[in-house]
Length: 271
Image 1 (tube, helix red, strand yellow):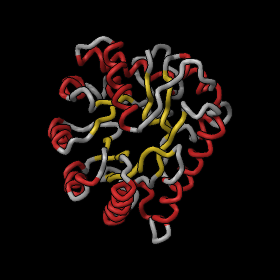
Image 2 (cartoon, one colour):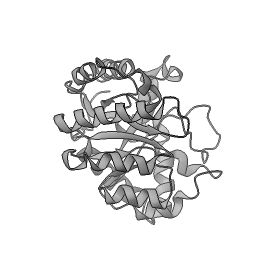
Image 3 (cartoon, helix red, strand yellow):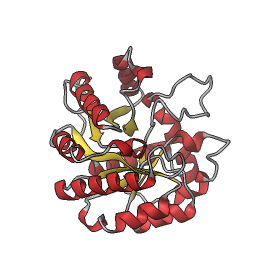
Image 4 (tube, helix red, strand yellow):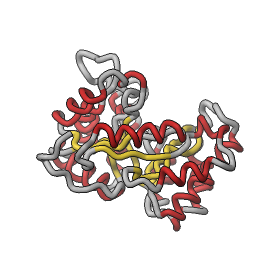
């Protein structure tokens, strides 16, 4: 059984001492490929460097490049050129993490929208998929996306945590949906139980968002989340979709591989 983690923050400080060991645990758990999330220009460059340093095979580690809405206030005229350079690299498979966050508003909303639209325009020009962030902004995100959607090959709303209205709005735009360990959280994730049944095959992908969103179903509970724990998300989503873990792994892995244009993994490839 193979899994693809479409969103892992491997450059986070909690992984700094032994990223090789984190990856080895993921591979042993069946997570055969990982997409490292870029959330700033510097962080995206770091993710790219990590892919090259930790994956000699060129088959296992890939990344995104973009500017998160929290950092949108730093977007300027030079940012698009710098991002374009990163997007030209073979390991970079999507634009993002970009989007809107009206929950924390760490950047002014007009700045968030400006940075998002600039990144969507780049994705449309370069024919790259988009890795989207959204918190309490689904209506405005959909409004902006409508102007670009016909020109984008694909887009995924990563770490979906919203409601039924938002989900069907995204599906109406033919977007993909990423599900994380949020669904394993009995305090705030139970509303996702019926919703994951509504996501069609070919539109659903799984992600750890490690080191964040540790699945609370784990016992004993570790301090940080790791991509190896994606199997917990797999089992929880499978349970609520009425599928076996093997069935879910098969179609979500195929979906992620197609979305990010990842190579078929050679089981004998080195880490």
